[in-house]
Length: 283
Image 1 (cartoon, rainbow, N blue to C red):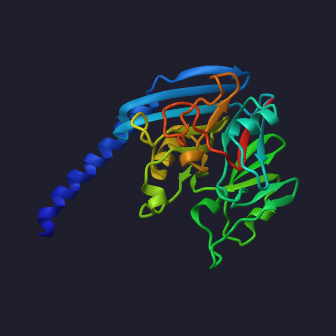
Image 2 (cartoon, rainbow, N blue to C red):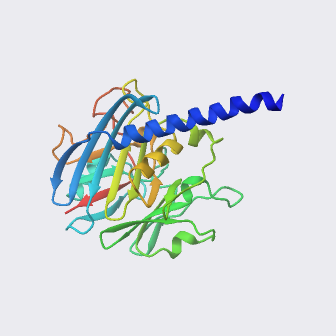
Image 3 (cartoon, rainbow, N blue to C red):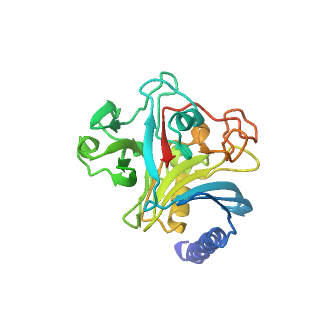
């Protein structure tokens, strides 16, 4: 019985490998629409028509050269929720994406937000004191430069990080190595809209992937990690997704939202959810 199954398993592995190679080639060879927003900031967009992960995928990427006069910053509210566009306009930003996970009912982040050395929101661990996946990474902002940190296993890890901090996750890649993800978890294996940040050798990438629509299926966390790898990132992290996924770029659509947020269940730019924190691109 075991011997008869072996050829089948080998064929299956070859088939899965061929599919993975097809997806990576499809992604890498895509002719992205590219628009210069300002010196050091490019907006890239591509709509994969049923040819990425056997599905429709609508992806937007902000590519930022950190050596130009561009500042990446953390925008937040301690309790209040508001749309990404409001955060961006109040800070006179060029662009913005939604940030980490938050309390939809009461407002405020559910994971640490630290600004100017002050923890404005603590990381809410489980009752047993354990961390969930979205508490094992962080965006770190130092003088306008963004980097990604990975949990070191200590209890007070985030409090020791220098700079402004937004705890988030799961981590997708760290120091050129893809993270091990719990593929049995519904959060990891279900396709949804996603937001993420990746750091390459010389660029910062802010990424949104639409979903929950016939025009865009959305991706699993594992598929998100693959995309980060195909973008040649050395570090990558997942942020809050689902109905929160929003990318705003000043003057690029009627309301500035360039992806298709899902809270109004329509394929338009009007369905952005109110959030607690954002990543800002500022001149």
